[in-house]
Image (cartoon, rainbow over all chains, first blue to last red; front, side, top):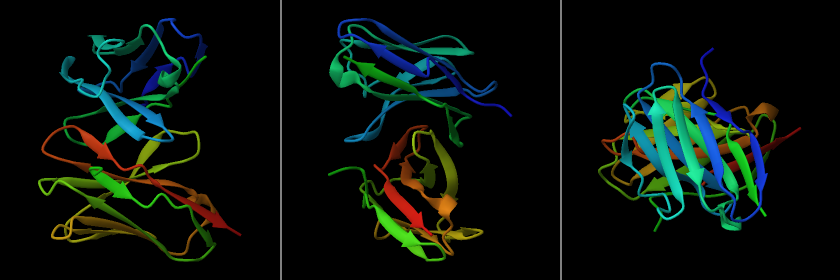
Length: 112
Length: 109
Protein backbone atom coordinates (compact mmCIF):
# COMPACT_ATOMS: atom_id res chain seq x y z
CA UNK A 1 0.00 0.00 0.00
CA UNK A 2 1.98 3.00 -1.29
CA UNK A 3 1.90 6.08 0.92
CA UNK A 4 3.48 9.49 1.22
CA UNK A 5 5.73 9.63 4.27
CA UNK A 6 6.73 12.71 6.20
CA UNK A 7 9.25 13.31 8.95
CA UNK A 8 9.23 14.45 11.63
CA UNK A 9 5.60 13.93 12.60
CA UNK A 10 5.91 16.50 15.40
CA UNK A 11 8.36 19.31 15.98
CA UNK A 12 8.61 21.80 18.83
CA UNK A 13 11.24 24.46 18.45
CA UNK A 14 12.12 27.93 19.60
CA UNK A 15 11.74 31.07 17.60
CA UNK A 16 14.76 31.69 15.39
CA UNK A 17 15.68 28.06 14.94
CA UNK A 18 15.87 26.31 11.59
CA UNK A 19 13.22 23.72 10.85
CA UNK A 20 13.56 21.09 8.12
CA UNK A 21 10.64 18.91 7.09
CA UNK A 22 11.05 15.95 4.76
CA UNK A 23 8.71 14.12 2.45
CA UNK A 24 9.00 10.92 0.48
CA UNK A 25 6.43 10.94 -2.34
CA UNK A 26 4.80 7.81 -3.69
CA UNK A 27 7.14 6.07 -6.13
CA UNK A 28 6.27 7.01 -9.68
CA UNK A 29 4.41 10.19 -8.85
CA UNK A 30 5.72 13.22 -10.73
CA UNK A 31 4.10 16.07 -8.80
CA UNK A 32 4.84 17.01 -5.21
CA UNK A 33 3.04 19.66 -3.18
CA UNK A 34 3.66 21.36 0.14
CA UNK A 35 0.63 22.69 2.02
CA UNK A 36 0.18 24.45 5.33
CA UNK A 37 -2.99 24.07 7.37
CA UNK A 38 -4.17 26.33 10.17
CA UNK A 39 -7.56 26.76 11.79
CA UNK A 40 -7.89 30.28 10.45
CA UNK A 41 -6.66 29.84 6.87
CA UNK A 42 -7.41 26.22 6.11
CA UNK A 43 -5.16 24.45 3.59
CA UNK A 44 -2.81 26.76 1.72
CA UNK A 45 -0.54 25.69 -1.09
CA UNK A 46 3.03 26.77 -0.39
CA UNK A 47 4.90 25.25 -3.33
CA UNK A 48 4.81 22.49 -5.85
CA UNK A 49 7.11 20.56 -8.13
CA UNK A 50 6.62 18.65 -11.35
CA UNK A 51 9.32 16.21 -12.33
CA UNK A 52 11.45 17.76 -9.55
CA UNK A 53 11.29 21.24 -11.09
CA UNK A 54 9.71 23.97 -8.94
CA UNK A 55 6.64 25.29 -10.71
CA UNK A 56 5.00 27.58 -8.22
CA UNK A 57 6.13 28.84 -4.85
CA UNK A 58 4.01 31.97 -4.80
CA UNK A 59 2.29 30.84 -1.61
CA UNK A 60 5.53 30.70 0.33
CA UNK A 61 7.11 33.54 2.36
CA UNK A 62 10.29 33.88 0.32
CA UNK A 63 12.45 35.43 2.98
CA UNK A 64 12.32 32.47 5.35
CA UNK A 65 10.91 29.46 3.53
CA UNK A 66 12.59 27.31 0.91
CA UNK A 67 11.49 24.12 -0.84
CA UNK A 68 13.67 21.72 -2.78
CA UNK A 69 13.61 18.30 -4.38
CA UNK A 70 17.16 16.99 -4.34
CA UNK A 71 15.98 13.76 -5.93
CA UNK A 72 12.77 12.04 -6.98
CA UNK A 73 12.36 10.34 -3.59
CA UNK A 74 12.86 13.36 -1.35
CA UNK A 75 11.27 16.77 -1.01
CA UNK A 76 12.27 19.21 1.74
CA UNK A 77 10.71 22.31 3.22
CA UNK A 78 12.91 24.54 5.34
CA UNK A 79 12.06 27.47 7.54
CA UNK A 80 14.92 29.71 8.67
CA UNK A 81 14.48 31.49 10.98
CA UNK A 82 11.22 30.09 12.35
CA UNK A 83 8.60 32.33 13.96
CA UNK A 84 5.62 31.56 16.20
CA UNK A 85 3.23 32.40 13.33
CA UNK A 86 4.71 29.43 11.41
CA UNK A 87 3.05 27.06 13.87
CA UNK A 88 0.76 24.86 11.77
CA UNK A 89 0.43 21.41 10.24
CA UNK A 90 2.53 21.03 7.10
CA UNK A 91 1.35 18.44 4.60
CA UNK A 92 3.17 17.00 1.66
CA UNK A 93 1.13 15.46 -1.16
CA UNK A 94 2.09 13.68 -4.34
CA UNK A 95 0.27 12.83 -7.53
CA UNK A 96 0.56 11.81 -11.13
CA UNK A 97 -0.09 14.68 -13.53
CA UNK A 98 -3.51 16.17 -12.72
CA UNK A 99 -4.93 13.13 -11.03
CA UNK A 100 -5.67 12.58 -7.37
CA UNK A 101 -3.29 14.03 -4.82
CA UNK A 102 -2.31 11.73 -1.98
CA UNK A 103 -1.42 13.40 1.28
CA UNK A 104 1.15 12.41 3.84
CA UNK A 105 0.30 12.35 7.56
CA UNK A 106 1.68 15.85 8.10
CA UNK A 107 4.26 17.48 10.36
CA UNK A 108 2.81 19.33 13.36
CA UNK A 109 5.06 22.30 14.01
CA UNK A 110 4.99 24.42 17.13
CA UNK A 111 7.31 27.40 17.31
CA UNK A 112 7.62 28.87 20.81
CA UNK B 1 -13.56 36.95 -1.81
CA UNK B 2 -12.17 33.43 -1.31
CA UNK B 3 -11.80 31.25 -4.38
CA UNK B 4 -13.74 28.41 -2.76
CA UNK B 5 -16.28 29.12 -0.06
CA UNK B 6 -18.00 26.69 2.26
CA UNK B 7 -20.24 26.93 5.29
CA UNK B 8 -17.91 25.92 8.14
CA UNK B 9 -20.70 24.30 10.16
CA UNK B 10 -20.66 22.36 12.33
CA UNK B 11 -23.58 20.32 11.10
CA UNK B 12 -24.83 18.15 13.97
CA UNK B 13 -27.14 15.40 12.70
CA UNK B 14 -28.51 12.15 14.14
CA UNK B 15 -27.59 8.79 12.69
CA UNK B 16 -29.72 7.98 9.67
CA UNK B 17 -30.27 11.59 8.69
CA UNK B 18 -29.65 13.08 5.27
CA UNK B 19 -27.33 16.07 5.19
CA UNK B 20 -26.20 18.32 2.37
CA UNK B 21 -23.18 20.57 2.05
CA UNK B 22 -22.77 23.36 -0.44
CA UNK B 23 -19.77 25.08 -1.91
CA UNK B 24 -19.30 27.97 -4.31
CA UNK B 25 -16.25 28.79 -6.41
CA UNK B 26 -15.26 32.09 -7.95
CA UNK B 27 -13.34 31.17 -11.09
CA UNK B 28 -15.64 30.22 -13.93
CA UNK B 29 -12.68 28.63 -15.75
CA UNK B 30 -12.40 25.92 -13.09
CA UNK B 31 -12.26 22.50 -14.72
CA UNK B 32 -12.19 19.80 -12.08
CA UNK B 33 -14.04 19.45 -8.84
CA UNK B 34 -13.65 17.15 -5.86
CA UNK B 35 -14.74 16.46 -2.34
CA UNK B 36 -12.04 15.47 0.13
CA UNK B 37 -12.64 14.18 3.61
CA UNK B 38 -10.43 15.01 6.58
CA UNK B 39 -10.75 13.20 9.90
CA UNK B 40 -9.64 14.94 13.07
CA UNK B 41 -5.83 15.24 13.20
CA UNK B 42 -5.46 13.28 9.97
CA UNK B 43 -4.61 14.11 6.39
CA UNK B 44 -7.20 14.93 3.71
CA UNK B 45 -8.26 12.03 1.51
CA UNK B 46 -10.19 12.04 -1.73
CA UNK B 47 -13.84 11.20 -1.16
CA UNK B 48 -15.08 11.59 -4.72
CA UNK B 49 -14.71 13.55 -7.90
CA UNK B 50 -17.63 15.67 -9.07
CA UNK B 51 -18.79 15.35 -12.65
CA UNK B 52 -21.02 17.69 -14.63
CA UNK B 53 -23.82 15.14 -14.83
CA UNK B 54 -23.70 14.47 -11.12
CA UNK B 55 -22.44 11.23 -9.64
CA UNK B 56 -23.16 8.85 -6.84
CA UNK B 57 -20.99 6.59 -4.72
CA UNK B 58 -23.07 4.55 -2.33
CA UNK B 59 -24.66 6.95 0.15
CA UNK B 60 -22.84 9.94 -1.30
CA UNK B 61 -24.11 12.07 -4.18
CA UNK B 62 -22.20 14.98 -5.69
CA UNK B 63 -23.69 17.63 -7.96
CA UNK B 64 -22.14 20.42 -10.01
CA UNK B 65 -23.90 23.50 -11.32
CA UNK B 66 -21.48 25.34 -13.60
CA UNK B 67 -23.89 28.19 -14.35
CA UNK B 68 -24.17 29.04 -10.66
CA UNK B 69 -20.60 27.93 -9.84
CA UNK B 70 -21.94 25.72 -7.13
CA UNK B 71 -21.04 22.21 -5.91
CA UNK B 72 -22.95 20.08 -3.47
CA UNK B 73 -22.47 16.87 -1.52
CA UNK B 74 -25.40 14.88 -0.19
CA UNK B 75 -24.94 12.16 2.41
CA UNK B 76 -27.85 9.82 2.98
CA UNK B 77 -28.36 7.54 5.99
CA UNK B 78 -25.57 9.20 7.97
CA UNK B 79 -23.28 6.97 10.01
CA UNK B 80 -21.23 7.84 13.07
CA UNK B 81 -18.15 7.17 10.94
CA UNK B 82 -19.15 9.98 8.58
CA UNK B 83 -18.15 12.51 11.25
CA UNK B 84 -15.32 14.50 9.68
CA UNK B 85 -14.56 17.72 7.86
CA UNK B 86 -15.53 17.79 4.20
CA UNK B 87 -13.37 19.89 1.92
CA UNK B 88 -14.60 21.27 -1.39
CA UNK B 89 -11.77 21.35 -3.93
CA UNK B 90 -11.45 22.99 -7.33
CA UNK B 91 -8.74 23.18 -9.92
CA UNK B 92 -8.05 24.95 -13.21
CA UNK B 93 -6.05 23.47 -16.07
CA UNK B 94 -3.11 22.94 -13.73
CA UNK B 95 -1.92 20.60 -11.03
CA UNK B 96 -2.93 23.11 -8.36
CA UNK B 97 -5.90 22.33 -6.18
CA UNK B 98 -7.75 25.10 -4.37
CA UNK B 99 -9.26 23.92 -1.10
CA UNK B 100 -12.20 25.36 0.75
CA UNK B 101 -11.81 25.69 4.51
CA UNK B 102 -14.13 22.74 5.04
CA UNK B 103 -17.50 21.94 6.56
CA UNK B 104 -17.50 20.00 9.79
CA UNK B 105 -20.02 17.20 10.23
CA UNK B 106 -20.80 15.56 13.55
CA UNK B 107 -23.15 12.57 13.49
CA UNK B 108 -24.55 11.64 16.89
CA UNK B 109 -26.24 8.40 18.04
